Length: 588
Image 1 (spheres, rainbow, N blue to C red):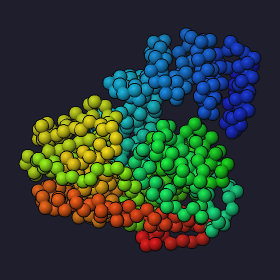
Image 2: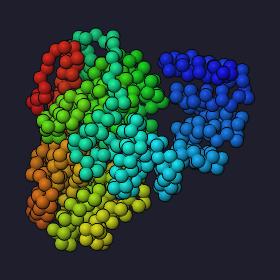
Image 3: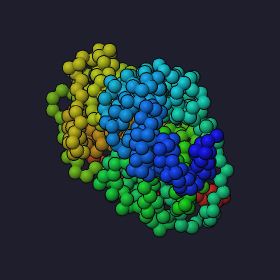
Image 4: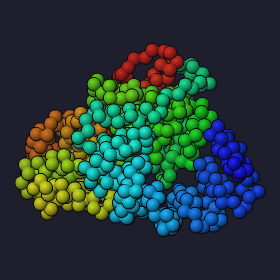
């Protein structure tokens, strides 16, 4: 073994042992002593990248490539750092150069597919992923292509690809995570199979034995942490803000660990509601664990689950004595180290306990509290033909959902359907949804796809074109349901079998309109059709729904916060060995 290889191994061992600064110092010395050694420069670039020191990492990644320009493997680190820096065009150029040098690197094709997807070139992304899969179907990351297939409305292909991935890569936590997170969208996956998918992921992360220095006093000031990547103008923020505003500040100190890559005015508003703020977006898993433990957090509440830039790998290491999942993901995490999951009795009736690895804490009457948007236009009843609508993401419009909606349109001759989503969908996504409806006999002239709007007020104003909103199945809407109700638009929802398909039941019941929940497909169709044809009832709902929502438990921030605070305190008291009542009662 050469001296350089020996030092590289030594630095790797130091970093694995949690001594990152010493590892970086060792690599810096190696690079300084060997200024023309590309391996030293690349190793330092990777270590700096993992430490969140991206500007320095980019310097050494470029240096490694300059020292060894014909080595395709050296370009991987440079592409990684450029991607993190948001320099996507240059990242694509680097990856294409790498693939010119070595077209058989499946990982490079996979990386190219991810970057092209981020740039919005979905055709190029699909082509790159398909090349990667053909080259190496046992490379776990090629199955991230399923997420893109879902975005462009190719649900059946996405499901088939993920099922193949679980067979090709049974030892991959990456594939297990993908299958767990995306199976929520597939109507053919029953609750038991979804639970098994999440447990399969959790088996990669056995519950660690960790000793915590936190004082086991059940009634002392709590140190609560909240971890999220969505602390911006985002659905999670709409439901987090009421608790942040009304929480009991005398009983707990709140630190928010923000992974928010693109902060905005909402970020600033949420930050002002916390006692402390920790920027976590630049931290790797080990760094996040270290930061949470350094702050002596007693109860850590994570808001992402398997979505977005998931930090479940860090939470699996148990950085806090009590760990809770809430709000941002509609299913169990599968992690043995996740102690609690906050739901309610309607989203998760008693049989749901067996589908979760966490203990369910039912926060009745609703596990959510909605922050209505400011500056929303007044509700207005539409003119013209009966129009149904859904402003949910295209990913939720699978074949079964489209078939159900088509039945509603057939039940009301001459009616129309307007669809609108977030605006970041691939060009073919709406076409796929239209094709599903056309297969069920709905002509294209009865379906309209609305373009992305510039602001919230313009988005909400489009509800004036909708008589009745149709919820998606088996994955319900959440923010979309609340926004429709706020704009006076009734939402008809199908009661599903498990949490993803029962959020509508909870929201509509809390809003005081449980009659809008349908027990099966037939009652969904009849309820939606009857409501659309009942002009007097629609008029009453349009003029009263906002006030009913405003005074309902769904928008009662103070009462919700008291229940939420009590639930968190109960979790801590149980950690301290003090029995508490569960589920949390609806009263104050």
